[in-house]
Image (tube, rainbow, N blue to C red; front, side, top):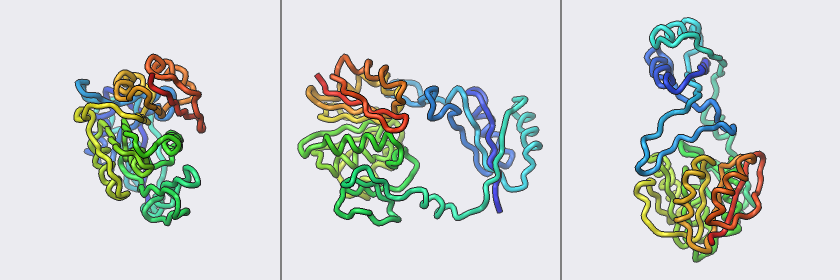
Length: 295
């Protein structure tokens, strides 16, 4: 048995309607994705305290999973009739049956950050038992260590964190950076995110790693300043949050920013320059880590 993956181009004003209608017409699942994901045109969907609730992207792809043998042209015709959205552009792909658990696990081997720092899924043994090993399985929240931005932040934390410091991980996702900071010896670690699922994931992962860290939704973050602030989120969000992140960093403290494409580095660095002495960017593939010292 197999399945059919259906992808439909959609706009902000019809993506949710198309997704909901596909489910009513018998799709096994349906989701909405940013059509410009991982490009300079990627659009952040985030909210901060006092802001309106997050919406959806301007350019979207509605993805649906269908049973093998489904009549896709007939489904598209019914979808257009039900939604009054005409001339839908779509593509399909046949997905063969397989052991999804084993296939997923095979994609996530231990990840080397440095010889003494690894990310290790629970179904693997640590390649170096003497290293600092972060136990982390892929989940609903972003941050498995496989993405260059996470890799860059982890390597920087390994070089920067000392035993007496406090660390704020803004946009904690899976909690991986907060967990690393705690394992590296930070005295106080706080993670914050706008997504309740991320907070739940971070708490669970911290417990799995037997580390102490506190996690909060953005509107519940306690006040105070930190020796180290790290934020691995989209560059557009980093630009908006610059005053808040600068305020959260102590004078003489360090900041690390990632989720930034190479061509965005100069602009983001300039935005943070009023508060920080920015250092030379570090590159990995097309991604950048920006760091600075608070004046």
